[in-house]
Image 1 (cartoon, rainbow, N blue to C red):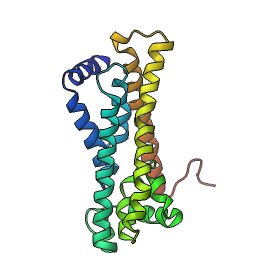
Image 2: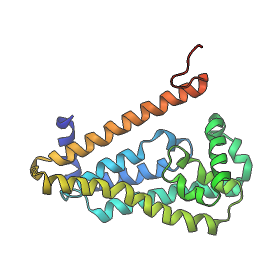
Image 3: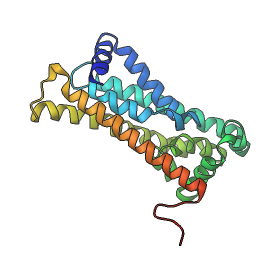
Length: 219
């Protein structure tokens, strides 16, 4: 894996705009209904944040790309729902995910305005709440009044951990910066956690579909 990461870091160092574009698209697609449930945007942002301490990427550029992508994605989804109203909730491609749409609507009804804030940190609901908020009649002023601060907090929460972790590994653990050891450790840890989380989520979905629960069995 480290032999794969070194060329990636080298490419980013030579062409940082590719990384900023990747960050923008990851944040954008993660906010789009359906696509957001499939694109590991948060994982990509967390991983690439490791390249800030070494100077391959600039902190302001990473934050700007993530914020711009998330705001454009959330805003586009909200306006699509606001324009089409409830009929969009049953239209393709949302119609292929009735369970997630029902969960998103229940989440919205439970938390109201705060659903826009909380959903930013809850995949895959994050990709469906903006369009649901628009479809169910939330006003644009209320939506963007909550969504903008939520996106700012979300971006900081996804970028700063990698920056601080890699900086701490080099500063306090004595890892050599020029060998990218801290970056490797952080990126590998992020992808390992993402794979484990995906496995747990997949298992729970299968259990829910079959009506099974952990520890359940014949009596």
